[in-house]
Picture 1 (cartoon, rainbow, N blue to C red):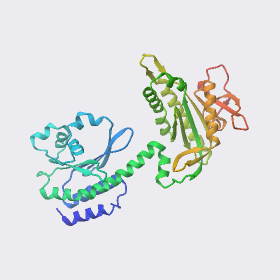
Picture 2: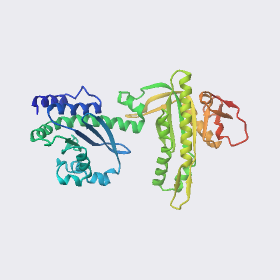
Picture 3: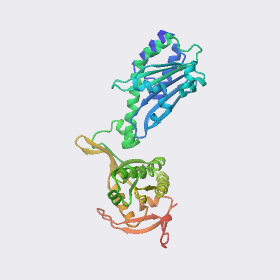
Picture 4: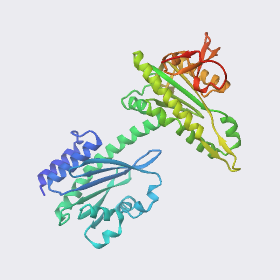
Length: 403
């Protein structure tokens, strides 16, 4: 093993591994440098717990000649046999090294080790990653060398672990912060916050399609069901909308009880507006179909069916930090948002699922039914409201078509 190369690697890590900013590039370069030091690695795994509503942890796997693959573990998977029998379990919970010669007979009794042996690996060692906050995560290292890892190679591997662990911790904290911001305020808002747009009053104007929806009959539903059942219903109901919103370029800004506020940013030209509105309509149809399929059976076995209302509008919004004291919220406000909220109430009164303002109907490539003019509280002018013709169950004629 080349001690000079190993010292250079440790110095590179201590200096922040600045030639590889992204996590996957950092892991790949680290492993390649270790091979250059004379440690005959074939497969390296890093396994870290993370703060995420649907994922317990992430993993990064490097294989010689194949680069990095990334995966995740869902909450609850740590209770399955695969994890309970894995050597990594001892690393996570006991914070100790675990070594297995993969050609020994006992290795075939553990599914992970048997798979690694079938892949041609001869030696396996799992090492703890001791973080500065007391948490322990895990790493694993294998080789295909016929003799396995030598004593000198293992000594070199252990010597570089503290510097590697500190860098992994930095990458983990960055990913955790970014992921939490994505989960709580949305990807675009999270990126702006991480970029330093955190001062109260730091806002900008944005042209956007506004999506504002709520669940019909939610107050009565909340009154007759247990709170935990209501939470379950809301989560499943929002699952009917959020994937479609994200798939068509939208960003969910707020959950307000049973209400959902999302925005779809729009460029300056009319073609972009038309394309965005077309995507929003597809998201609306997908959400409507999902909600129609949503069922919930209560304790009395009475099956609940659900309907929601959705208002669509296009306008300028003020997008940024608003709040009081040291508590701020990254959101959007403005007359356009207020109008969307009023339109959503009109959708309920008319028993419509999707309604749109003139601004959206003019741009959206769909056939619309003119539902009439309605006075809007707080607005000087009445607003003409349109419903999707496909929801027109009356004998009224279609009077407006876009596209």
